[in-house]
Length: 334
Image (cartoon, rainbow, N blue to C red; front, side, top):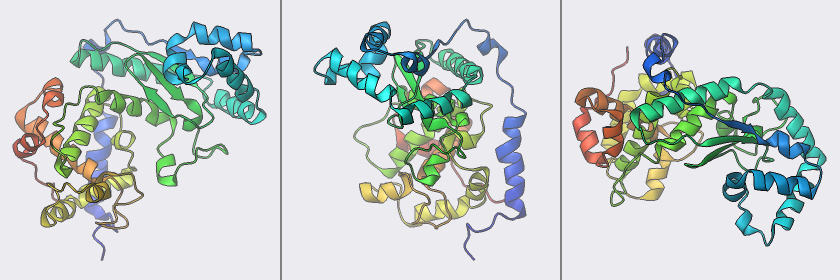
């Protein structure tokens, strides 16, 4: 029998007590939330779809220079006139109009996402006082861009985050498209922000180094969003999380027996780290990116056993040290 084919009673207990309850009973830190911080969210797609002429678009490009420069990449155009003409044609296209109407219906109220972002930014500033709050724009990209995250701005392509049941869907594999829903927006943004604090050793190109990198990213996201379910951080379903924990000993044995931790072949590394519907080298029912999930467990153990603060964790670029000092051992099935 395939080791990853059944959950079993022990796995179901693990799902209830390890994957669910820690989020259900979570409370955010009131001291952190008391910070004076406000996120400005500009519903830019509304202004762009209300524009009627090239002059209207010219006004918007001048009104939002960061968006024009970073997101629209105005420097690639011969002139602003050519950019405004393109925008005029795109936003007067009937299919784009219908897509925008759907977005406005689904995201009529954006206050919950704004509040979640504000709380996340307060947590980031608590750990990293130099963090500067970026301006947040929403947009309808025509499925050209899901998220742009820089230190200056964040642009959310709302059309990517329509419900999975919606008739408009991005051209993504199903296993990836399922992660593009509203609940994933803020975790995806926070994980992207983590990269600016996630120090690495550029000379270390092992599988272990990549595992630790992603482990630090997910640990950062969980620290900033402590009440967010793990499924929205790593993009596994609750069943996949439970199955992975129930088979952690088997997964770890595969890595050890095949001497994978110090593998440097990028094709081998991709089998365990890259986007895929499953980790075929282990099992066709094992979720993809299992190396990232395993790296998260190692980093969690390192932080717990060494009592390391989030800033110190992110500054540590020594993947080998993190692994050795983690004392990591697979959790036996319940």
